[in-house]
Image (tube, rainbow over all chains, first blue to last red; front, side, top):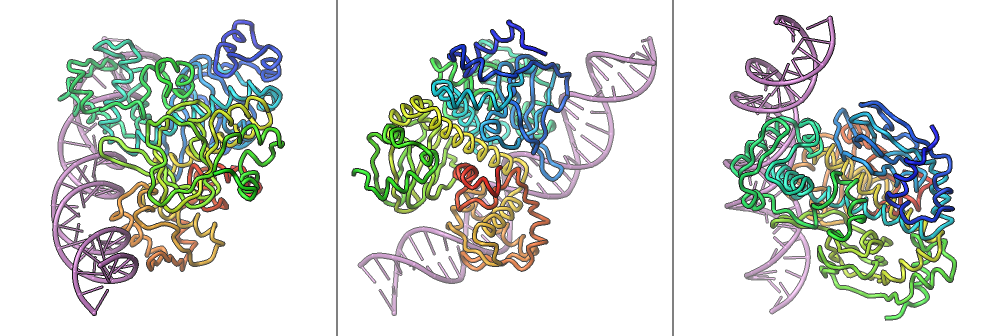
Length: 255
Length: 255
DNA sequence: TCCGCGACTTGACATTTATCAAGCCTTCGT
DNA sequence: ACGAAGGCTTGATAAATGTCAAGTCGCGGA
């Protein structure tokens, strides 16, 4: 399906395309097309060769990986996010699999075109580097989150981050099923349940997808959020996706 | 200290400088200087603003991070590796601290110069993007290693990787103290000792820094090394550092 | 409406990992 | 040579996390 004007507009406002001139935009987007996928569709498996840059415009996508019958979720992306950019730049294979969590709308940009745009226009290339650097830093944060915090601390920080993104009120709505959240936080669903009950001490009460806070101060004392790990103020995107926001919203958090 | 010709030669052969033309090289290296540091010197602490790109020419450097009285090692770098490139591209703060493990020789390139070089020469900028993409993929591998494997499996794979790098013989020498190795593998020194004894079943015997293998097949059956996680064939650099090698030695492992 | 499936929770238990303490051994400096 | 310090190992114990099983709840389809 060809790209409609409204889509082109949306993409232009995004990521490294924002400041590109028209000629570079046309070069980098040459052959790009928009595609819709139903929920639970595998877009890419680990090891697949990567021919397109993916730009998620609607819906959500889980990036994951497996080994020896184990699986883990590395990130959950929300619009607008790019993914597998690194593999595209290196003309390499995917290290992660990508699966839609809901019906999603994805712009697929031929890797050749993107690389040509980068090589022809240094300013555009620099913008892609910024995106890559932001993604890198998102991963560094993710590793720190996992190696330095136990599961309850990760949950507490996740909740505080969500609270900030949802406007700082005393009640939030979890954006994912709890089993998906558990996978994202690197634990089992059973463990997530227990982590939630540990947090009832800290004024956290759960009712389905609704989570209420009665004492944020004491929760923060446990969570100890840090600008060197967490990305408050970022939109509803996690880890890898955050990276992009990190740059875009640099006013608040120049990461 | 100004850059001597021999150093310039060494740097030119490295990383994204390899294919740069002279003018771009001069621009990107403008104001660069070489510095020697003794062992255990803190080059950078988390949160510090980053003014220079670091290029390790001699010695070794540990990248780490801390939170709430805990500390973790994210990578150990060996020559020739760049570090904190992402922070330089984004003109941002360091997310990791950097400490020399031994007496080290480091080339410090002003961030301004590097960024100018990238913005003036698209081909050079693309090479930096490739470096960044490689670093990103190194981190993805690292996360997968930690989330999908237990500590014994991580050790087993580490040993097999070292064996491959050291020529595939039946005996290797550990390149770091065991306590450093434990930190790198994300466990306590006590746990590392126990992991080694678990591997004696699999034909692994340890004598100080020397490790001998009597049955690689059975060790591989436990370790199950994967090109989607491990980077065999890479030089003696871990995670983040590997990323660079990944591209440079792309013939064997185009990752 | 009723049924059944799937998400979620809870408890009992197993496994993995960390912590604390003690002791051995090597290294290095006096 | 001696002694102190640090790296390494081992055992005992505790904490964190995963696994298995059962049971509740709510929602959607027949």
